[in-house]
Image (cartoon, rainbow, N blue to C red; front, side, top):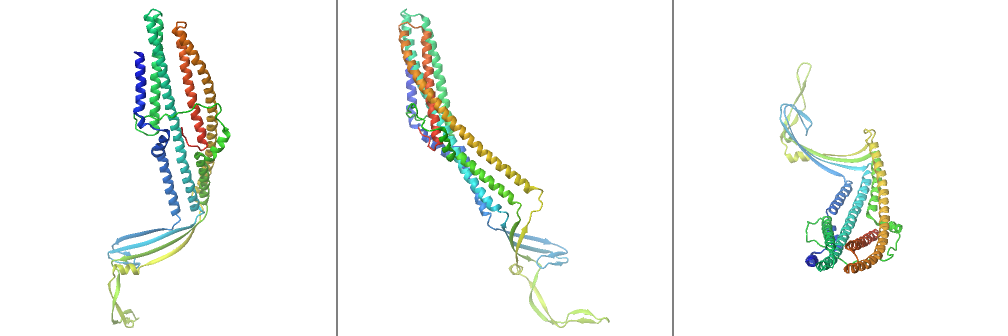
Length: 474
């Protein structure tokens, strides 16, 4: 019965892998999918688009601006006619004003130019940040992928050991029934089988968790049918690390986007300091304007009447004094378009603004810019130290995993021979159940250690290769 249950479990496991083979994801496809769909990567791309807009706007800031204005004013009583600049009495005036104005910055301490350069550096840094996020996601996917492979192998090893134990349970049961062994031996074997069953449940749970973890990194909906392709991975060679950790770091320092981004951010901070210092410089600007207007009470001369003498005063004796005969103008309507055309005025100005006192804001801006510059220096130094530690840690871990693999592999060979010998002695009654179970548990632990060392070595070497600019593949 136990053997049948083991065979059924193996069959179901194989069937599950075969049914999901069409949906199985390779590591390369996982990486490709993440590059196109991962939310963190999309957010980083949006940041680059934002910085692209900032750069575009800073370049357009060099162009003179142009603004238009239009207004209407209604006045009553004594009011000023904006078209004639004369006061009227007890009249209602409706006037319209139209204007265009332009402003061009000629010089402001190179702040505009430095702002453009700073935005260019920020944009380049954001591109490197996108690559840095992609690198982090790629390493996370590779680690999750290898964890799944490790857990699947662990499940297979546990199932294989359960099959061996199940066979021993059936054989011991027959011997107990025949009176050749005490029933206690059978009970201890069944306890061992139950323990291995629990190990299988734990291994299967770890496999399920690792599959869910990879789906979460990929931002995929949780799907129990999700599976991966299992490539054949060779065992580690005796001495496959042909590069030195310092050589790997020297390469990584030149190509890793996280370092490039920090360098560009430092250069950006230098431009930010130059911008702040530019606030002390005088500002030279050019301005221009064009204006016109219309008044609904304004009239224009439409004709000339016959000459008349107009009283202009009187003598000491009270006699009127008149002017020479003058032609009297006749006023009429002043059309809107005619007023707009006749009331035109324009001007050009050149100005200089010199900062004298502005509540110490310029000095504060310069001080803050210096702080940002120093912080950028420290960030670059911190990233280099982090990269240095990561490279040397990966190198040390790879060496340790290799040594562990080689030692465990030799131990496993001896352990397998020892277990075969113990198993044969157990079958003929020369070894008790406790010694048999102890030998078997040691074998299982050694097999697990060997798998762990193998996958740990593979992952660390992939990291080292990645730091040298090689893509992550299996």
